Amino acid sequence: MGLRRTLLWLFVFSTSVSQAIPRSEIPEMYDDLDGSELALRLVLDGKIALAQRVHADLPSDQGSSATLARVRGLLAEEAGDLRVAERELALAAMRLSSVGRASEEISVERSRVASGLQKWSECVRLLTPSVAIKKAETAITYIRCLAAAGEKQSAFDVSAQAARAHPQNVALIRERVAILVMLDLVQTAAREARLAVQQMAKASDTATLAFELYDLILPRDPRSAQAILELAVLRFGDHEVRAKRAQHLFRQHQALMSATEFAALAPSHPQYYLSASELSRLAGRDVEGARLAMMIPDARDRFRQRATFDLASGRIPIVGTLAASFDRTFLGRLDSQDEDWAYAIAYSRLRTGAWREQGPLSPSGLLSRVRRPDLLEKSVQLRSRIGDCVSQGATRCSFE
Picture 1 (cartoon, rainbow, N blue to C red):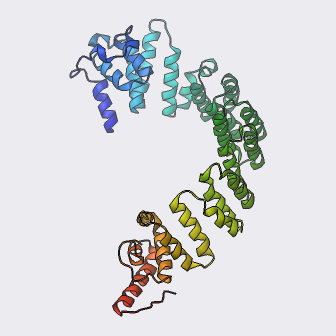
Picture 2 (picture 1 turned 60 degrees about the horizontal axis):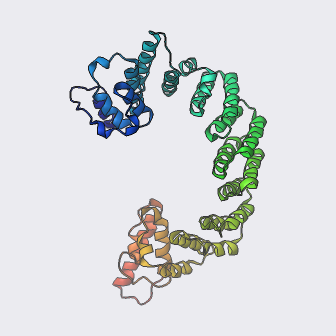
Picture 3 (picture 1 turned 60 degrees about the vertical axis):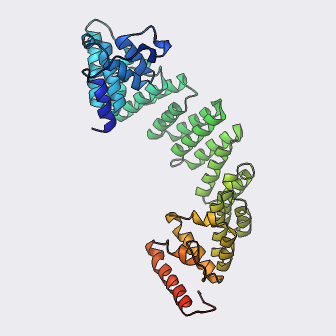
């Protein structure tokens, strides 16, 4: 049992060490509540720590109430002990039933716990479509349980009802389209996805929805997936949507068109200069790629990208000159994840005659950081060559 769960159980199931919680510590909005009703409302409002303290302070004669069993169940769910949650919530439902009452809320909570335990049929049994679609989160749980229980037609029907009830809920629309794709109704999925994107009221929601629907449909119908992003761009022109479209173009082996898209975005959103530069390089547009590399805002990324062009072109000494133009703070930030660049900088600077330098940022110092097996032997050889040149008092040293 994890520490968090252990601490929670000390609150939930121990009453021997409890201390009365001062009423002043409970927000005024709960003034009309007391006992287990107060604990329940606090749990439902997400005030778990306070609910735990109120629960621990309840008198023992409340132990048989349906409300208290529900509190125990919800606290157990919060702690991750779904089996205890299942037992306590079932007890709460039974106690209500014994007095001729029922609770939709408890049924919803029990279905959520059953889903967490992968008891799909039990999850389905506990709910009806009319109850499930009242809240988007419950509808999603119910739809997933139906699908997992093999009731795909019911999942299809309920997802349609829920999508109509909550047309602006991104997660629910995604679930609806996922069900359609699962049922091989890809064209229907694409059509409903386009309609959903058209109906979204907010740019941020449109971008999020377009990304998720794009990813769902892309493996089955790349052209329809691209059309979803195009529609989102037409509606809002959001830079994240356009970036997603550019990524799709690259996956479709259209590096130049992708680079052009990123380059158009970069002046107003500089984080895209790196992508624009790299894609230009991959498209064979080295001059344009090198120009874009000069505009990359992050110093480390800018150096790496500019050096990539020079190394690929065989202009190794230029990398050394480039590295020398960066301040020592930048070079000092090179870490174990930059071993390839530590090696490249050291080698290029050796080629420009910097082999006499000493210190952690000298060629020898940079090479001493290299531990990667594929570079280690080369690094040792270069350091050995430096040592030979120094010991021999050489005025010139070759590192071809």
